[in-house]
Amino acid sequence: MSLATEIELLESTPVHKGVQLPIYMDNHATTALDPRVLEAMLPYMTKIYGNAASRNHQFGWEAEQGVELAREQIAKLIGATPKEIIFTSGATEGNNLAIKGVAEMYREKGNHIITQVTEHKAVLDTCKRLEKNGYKVTYLPVQPDGLVSVADIEAAMTTETILVTIMYANNEIGVVNPIAEIGKLCHAKGVLFHTDGVQAVGKIPVNVQTDNIDLLSLTAHKIYGPKGVGALYVRRRNPRVQLNAQIDGGGHERGMRSGTLNVAGIVGLGKACEIAGAEMEAEIARLTGLRDYMRGKFEAALDYIAVNGNMDHHLPGNLNMSFVYVEGESLLMGINDIAVSSGSACTSATLEPSYVLKALGLGDDVAHSSIRFGLGRFNTKEEVDYVADKLIDTVLKLRELSPLYEMVKEGIDLTKIEWTAH
Picture 1: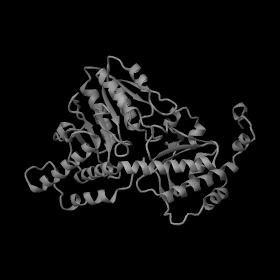
Picture 2 (picture 1 turned 30 degrees about the vertical axis):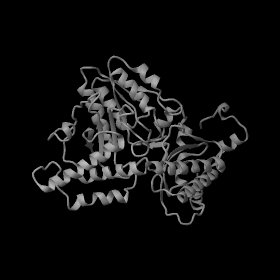
Picture 3 (picture 1 turned 120 degrees about the horizontal axis):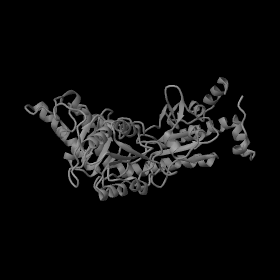
Picture 4 (picture 1 turned 180 degrees about the vertical axis):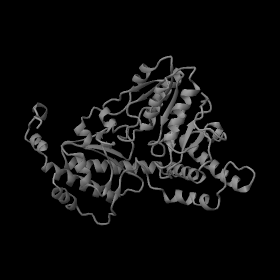
């Protein structure tokens, strides 16, 4: 495509009055800080600045009170007890602590871990590190709708299996796994169950008791809290889970995670959880409505599009769609005033299609044409209209320039064409 054509695409945009640009629709990557969360945090940045581990003066006591209130708020949201909440720097650290901590603590019992190919890199890379240290890891495939099969998990279990780690909800395609069934299976087999709950906690109901979860990682910045703080739920009874610490020095957090606590961040995480719990039902209804409205606009205006992932078991604010016969990079250039995620991941030298979409069986061309829309608390219907109309307009213009789309519309079967390289 010529530069002149690309500029023409960018300039011929549908007009929407009252919409402030750019528009943020990448709420699976991170969320804006809720003003109510900031308000709760501010005193702990200026006035209540003590170290929560300083137990011999008022500054420390007040900081500790803020931390313990947050522990209660987080525990309430997920059906845990405050003593089961361990603070971390985020879910990447939480996943590392849970997986490595279990692997090392239960090494004498076995050395086998089960996960799935569509996990976040924080889980996949942690498992790969353990493989280098002699552990065995089974990476299960997923079904075409993105869900893992409970039967596949059971079939993969051996007498050496000590841990199953399966994410609650996928960060790219928004599918929600059958967590309670997986947890029930694990408990019946005497295997610990960890879930990366980052995309689910605060967005849909999560209860570690009814879901049979032994360890759960969560983070603040996905639920309108601050970056750099998270928590790990560690079950205390039936069974009591023990972990080998990954960070030593001081024995903080019941000896599982040493380090001076990020008091202001922890207070923010607690407040974010409190708000999420209070407003979840209304937020689910609103975001589901906006998502389905956006999908309806796409499907009414465009052909050769597809939704990726099971929509019956799905996050409210997630919509991952493929716009076939459109080149992904050109599509993103055409909507450069909208923050979304593409079906491609930039690496050092190449533009690789998403490994999650590839795991669903999508070809490179379809994966490259996929967009993840992440709707959140602060998105409006006016923004959805702008995004949908602009994307439709851009797709239509790009398809006018696409010989492949023209051939398909003429009824030519592209799979039967022998392409010649020049």
